[in-house]
Structure formats: structure tokens, C-alpha cells
Amino acid sequence: MNIKTLPLSGGNIGIERESLRTTTDGFLAGTRHPEALGNVYTHPNITIDYGEALLELVTDPHQSPKAVYRQLLELHQFSAQNIGEERMWAASMPCRLPDNPEHIEIGYFGQSNGAKLKRLYRIGLSYRYGRTMQMIAGVHFNYSPPEKLWAALAEQEGRKPTDTWRNERYMGMIRNIQRHSWLICHLFGTAPACDQSFQPAQNVLDRLHKQSFTWKNATTLRMSQLGYQNKIDFSVSFNHLNEYIRDLGAAVLTSAPVYEYLGLRGPAGHYRQISTNILQIANEYYSGARPKQVMKKGELPVSALSARGIAYVELRLLDNNPYDPAGISLEQIHFLESFMLWCLLKDSPAFTTADYNEANHNRLRTACLGLSEGFSLFKNGRSISAQDWANEILHEIMPIAESLDQSDHGDSYREAVQNQIRANSGETLRLPQRVQAEMAEQEFLPWATALTSQHLGTLKQPLPQDIQTKLKAQSKQSLQEFAEIEAKAADEIPFDDYLANYFNPLHECLAKLTV
Image (cartoon, rainbow, N blue to C red):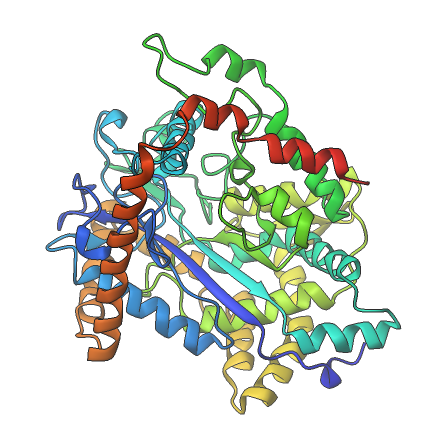
């Protein structure tokens, strides 16, 4: 494949960044989502994830790293300037949490059936995984290649650029992300330690300082067993889209004894979870990368994929970069676009069970032990130095970065990859090494609190008037839209009926599926 002749630039990039709202001294904010930021149910760019205090800032799709970073930073600045004295936590691992996890406020979305379902899903997560774990924050990187690249690839391969072919290529891209997910932890893991108030750590981790816990040589607790991992083992195929839809749909519709024991409702009759199934909804499947399709109103993720195929891929492996006010640096975005294209263009054989297990093992091993001296992984069943393998991958990515730079008339992509080559070789520190060195000297809480405060200089800078006006209008519009939805909520069918019918489209989708 001749990379130099392929039109690589101009793909769509979108970023979602989560950040806890905290007090000035690093304690979890106990306030509701500020009205000045609009409504969490209707605002397209400023919302919350699990809890009232867990901000989620979502960019629109952009065709350049600079454009997507600019909007992400503007969203951060607008948010920081509308939360009073509260701060936006820089780290992925949580700030000081309440002694009683029940005091972590679950997000409220309103009285409409759709809003109640969003809250019930989060209530279910609290029963299944605990509220504390849901306070871990991260960055999701969404990417779709440019349309012109699909046409050029099909021509090079002598294929027609059908939806089926495109879905095959997307699934190959996701398999390569899974195979090399360890690399993201190796280069960008920034969560090796946590505060003592993160209760799951207390019986598992080693004490780093008086009030901090760690795993020695970990790169990211977020991507370890302590972070987002499904409790019930089930297999999902990444070899074909229809197999993925089949397996994910089955997990949403198959009951799990442990969740049956938990019960659909509590003693008082209130719902505890959407269902007693392996997954309440497809989004509960914690994976390093997901195929995604833009959903229509009321549509289920699996139904959207079945109807219209894959529109983009969501990379979910990134910790917050605590050294950047937007949680991800512009250099990282340049690198990740190059990495995603490499995953698309590199040959990607179908997964065997052994391949899938090896990929997961490598990711978990890097998350937990990635800073060990002489650290090694498994590649096709054989041991390989992580440093050597990373060097091999980075040099394979470089021609893609060079091609992107030619289109961009600059050197930002090459610099981004070259800086990782230098860090991997030991010439400079990788992000995980920098964090580990700083964590060795001080407690997690003051370390993260200081970084959070350092970003105030950037986050409190006044926005251009046109951006400020636009964001204020957007917040106001979201409040108006929410009021209209709430006004109609009383006319909706009872929630019990809504929930009973909610998965009918999924049953229909799976019945039509051919694998």
C-alpha cells in the first residue's frame, strides 16, 4: 500500500472530556450542575456523565486537531468561568470523595421517560459497580477517516466502496486498536495512584504515602481491574459488525444470576436497575474502542449500527492529561489521528480467542506493571520487550504523520510521533514516568490540586465576545428545550410501560440479523 498517494488528511475528530467539579481544596463538589452551563439533558456540548459533579464536555466533529482543541478549550473556559469558586479536576483518578459513597450525587435528567431511564441506568451502575468507581474520569477520542480516503482505499484494493466493505475496514481498525491498546497506556497513562478516599483501592493497592495508594510501576489504574471493567465475563466478536451486534445485543437481553439476586426493584418498590441482564444497555460494555453510529431520537445504539453501519470509532483508552487545561494536549491529538489511521491501514487479521485474550492481557499488564524495568508483553504468543515493540510501531506510524504534515504544510504530526520515539527510547520521560516521579515526592491530593489550580490562568482567560455570546445562547436554548420536554412529561405513557417496551426494537433488530 502506497501511503504517500493516499489522501489521509481531513478526517473528522471529536473529543469528549470528563472532569470532576471540586472545591478549592480538592474535595468533591456537592452542588447540582450549574444552571449557567445549561441543562444536562438537552445541551449538545456540556453535560454530565455519571454524577452531578462529573462534567462531560463534548466537541463537535472537526477536520483538524487545532480546530477540535480550540473548541474543547473554549468549552473548558466557559465551564470554568460559570462554576463560581469550584474547580475542574485535572486528574483521572478522583478528588477527595465523601466517606459515605451514598453522598455522591447521581445525575438528574428530568421527569420525562427518557430522562428517568438515563438516571435509572446510573442507579444500576451504582448497585453493580459502586458509586466510587464511577468517579474515575477520562477522555474519549472519536475519529472517522475522510470520505476521499475510503474511495482511494477501495480503488487500491480493487473493491467497490460499499457499506459492507467499509464496515469490514472499520472492524479491522478496531481490532488493531485492541491489539495495540497497551501502547496508549504505555505512552499516555497518567493514573498510577489515587487518594485514600477511593475506597476500592484500600484492600488492593499498596500505600504510597500516608493518604495515597498505588500499584508499584502502574501506568493507569483507570485501565486496570480497579477501573472500568465488566464484572461478568462474556464474549463480543470484533471480526464482523453483525457478529458484534449479535453478541452485544445478546448481553443486553440475557439475564445474569448475580443481577437477578440484586433484584430489579428494591424492598420499597423503586427500580434498582433497567434490567437484571448482563448489560443494562449497550453503553455498559466497557471496551477500549467501540464502533459508533449517530443515533436518531429514541434509537438504541445497536439498532443504529444495524440500520446504518459504522460512522466513526470511539477510542476510550485515554486518561486525562493533568498537565493540559483541556485534559488532552494538541500534540496528543496529532499523535492519535496518526495512530488511528495506522490502525485502519495496517493489516488486521480476524481475532481468534487467543488473540483477543492476548490483547486484553497486554493492556491490563501495561496498566498495572508498565513502568517495571525490562517490561515485556506478548506478541503472537512470544515475549517481546515493550520498548522494542513500541519503537517498531512508532516508526511504522511516522510515514502516516509525514503524509499528514504534507497536507497540513507543517511538521506537527511528525513532531508528535518523534517526541514519543524520544520518550520511548529514554531520551525524555514518557507521561507515565513523569507522573510516577512526581507522585514519589508527594501525596496524590495536593499534587492533583496544584495542577488543577495551575490551569486557572488559562481557564479564566476571557473568551472572545462572539464565542461567549454563542455559548450563553446555547445554554439558554438548552434550558428552554428542557422546559418544553418537562411540560410534556405528564402526558407520556407510564414509565413501567415505557421500560417494558424499551427493548422491543432490539429484539426486532436481532431477529432480522444475518451472521
